[in-house]
Amino acid sequence: MARKCSACLLLAGLLASLESFEADDWPVCDNRAYRDDETEPGGLKLLGVKESPLGYFPQTPGALTHEHFFKQLREVLSDDCPRVMVQVGLQPAPGVLRNWTTASLWLRYFNHSGIVLVVDPIEDYLAHFEDTLQQEPWASVLAGKVQLRTAKASLATQAHGKARDRPVSFDAALGGTTLASDEVMRSCSESNAGPAADSPLHACSRVLKRMAQPEPIEYAAPVLSFDDVWKRELGDKHIDFLRVDIGARSMAAMFEKSFSKVLQSRSVSVLAFRIDGFWSKADLKKVVEQLDKLEYFSMFSFVCRESSQVGRFAYYGPDGLLAGPTTYLPLSSMDIDSVVDWDKMPLPQDVLALDLRQPELFKTVQLGDVQCDVDEDEATETCAAGDEQCKNQAMAADGPPERPELMRVTRSSSRSLTLEWKPPSAGPTPDSYLVRVDPGAQEETTDHDTFDTLKGVQMHTINGLRPDTEYTISIRALGQGGESGKASLTHRTEQEEISASSSPYEVRESMHCGMGGPEEVQPAGPAPGGKSYFPGFGETEACRIRCDDNRDCVAFQVHKGDACWLYRRRPPPERLSSPRD
Figure 1: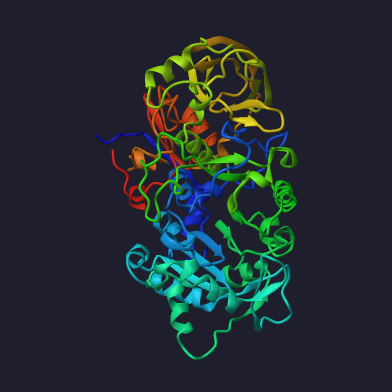
Figure 2: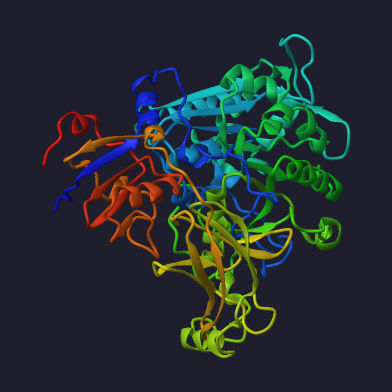
């Protein structure tokens, strides 16, 4: 049944900007809409990442592809806006990998619109990539919605004069360099690529045909910095996922100089790079420290082959034990010199660096931990595989957690409070916390380990409060064994003067907004699980306050005296021009 409302309101500024939107503009996706807002006092807060009970570094081979991360990312990010993906390096892979490049897998999960750019100095690899993605199944997936681009270039710390072609050479494993043509032919030989190299789906098939011809194979490409490629091919557009795998020495210097502008401007949401035999622990430490300064958080990608969920996921690309599930082992918050044993870590491995100003990205870590049974590992290590009763009893054996400690208000405004507290210092570790606000009996649940990595504390912001009002806030720790006693405090919100003439909303009376659940802010529904529906808040001002305090809210509707709904989409224009009772 359609919900009737007495007022439908939306941000007037948003209406104006959308009405004047031009096709050449590049919309900002929701996950980046508030990335450049001023951060809270005390610096950036990292959500949902902690020292992993799975260890400090991978001691098993890395994942074959990034597909499982893309599955997790697709649960976190919408596919309703143009996104940019860049793959640097198209080396052919042996056996089952064939042409399952990172770019081709990305297109299976994000193909609404945007750009996919592949950079490599080997024209045969680039041509094969273009040819393959013009065929099924990619042709129907793309259907003209995503621009495919290739750039022939050898990356260096800086460009070498004019962008003219120069002979391509690669760093050799034993020192020195080797001609790219020699290395490509060696990689595509049957002993290295396997019998699958003859398949048209394999990048080496094109090379093998050329090897059978009398003309020698030679490769030449311009020597450019990545910043040059970024500006020339993408016009400095923001990159949602940047994959770097070029098999070269001095990658720390490469990231520092060749990727300087794109990283310093923080124009990348997720940076993924592969560490191989050319890397050292010192190189990894230097790159992580560089990224730390630019407000990226670095983690090893880790395949949890012992998870109970192995085999439960379907993949477009290669499957098996090295496909997933995957979770992530923090690097940024660790002493790499002490905790990473380089000799025990099989190479290659993948490192992901996530933009700290986009907290939604870190939900992939929480998904990974769930899919890898991380939360159960320590509490159930003595239970037999598959014995769920034993696991539940083990997690509840120590009783409920103790109450939270050192609770305080760290930031106060007229409509919100930010709380900080420490987990209990003794007893079982909480799974989550129940936060209650009175008056109003407002309750919210927040996961354990939503913490400041520097201070080791929990944090939570309460929105939708009234100005100049005294509130009592209580927090209980929740666990398998029950809930703790409450820690509480009393605090008065700041005063606020609101001028009706300065309201950013445009009011439409006696009409229905014409929207439902899919357009509501997420998660949809009432508190504590949802953030879009507020029964009992049937006044315009009360609903406006809740919309103001939710960054995703651009419109709301009020059923007078009953409830209000918050939306992340503007109402359809035809609804605004044709009000109805």
